Length: 466
Image 1 (cartoon, one colour):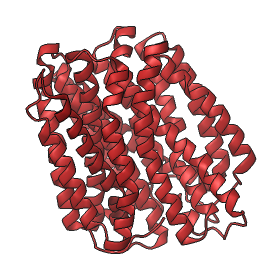
Image 2 (cartoon, rainbow, N blue to C red):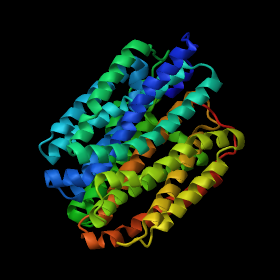
Image 3 (cartoon, rainbow, N blue to C red):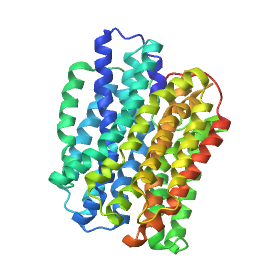
């Protein structure tokens, strides 16, 4: 994990080799990010091709995000123990094979299962690759620049995903959004074998298997009831049983983690208000982002009759705002602390959501694009200060764990956003989809307002590089 990476000895790699390592590892981040957005824009075509409704399509996205969220923390411990390059290569192989299975899936069940396996592969890519980069760049200033590049890659993946997905679907059908991963994985495997050195932690953390199982069960039950609740009934016997299981899993997880000397998740960190607020803020940001992406996809394709390519192109203002503002946010955090960037993030996100609370069938395209731009700017300003707030004031031994918890919160937010947005519009007719989606845009605005709370709780300290 990142904490153990910081303790590694200085790397003897040349400057060119170090930045080559960053390029190769950033490719994995790009792959993971693109795979979320590229699938979002293809959901209507997937539903048409497999004959499934909106609720089934939610599982196509959330099978990936829930598994990714569940395993993010443990993947770092595995990499520290068995070797970061080795785990990274395993993640690429699993991700690539699962992508092929997605492309060949004959039914919804097979596709959802393959997406879950993709999540297993993805959990071994993003956090492990960042640990490799940190280990390869011992100089703090160079490491800070590298992490700034790393943050910008996610915005770039947002830009490439929907547009690339729309173009592929228009030319080759929805299965091509999964086939495209195969050659990228092959290239990445070759580059990793040639350029990326192996590294391990001096003292690897113990694996907390019981905590891992309980966390996975908890997230699956929580997201599952959000997706299926409208169908089974929120007060039905089945739902009540799930609520009881969620309560039991939560209690069990807390008890197990408090008794562990090296827990999967250090719950003591949540006693720090800035950390707890930053984690909730990270979740809120990704709730807003994924609500926006899913509602955008369904509204533009179902209500307005846009093609997947046009729908993907409509997200370009959002991606542009995120890509341009992410490095600016990092610079502002370094000079002024996290509070001001978080205020900007909250204000822009809330404004974008409020633009669409009265969405209708004939809402101006210009207003829609402006709203997407505002949300993208808010997203770009949010991530750096939230990460900084989460780790500020912590010793290096806890900073990596704090960063991993924040990353997990982001993926949980993504899953919750998809579940909530899908629940709002599930079963809605084309004529009523715009009205049904309006509470979703209010939720986006509320997430922006919560970032203002996070800004108030943040510590105005200089940026800490992981």
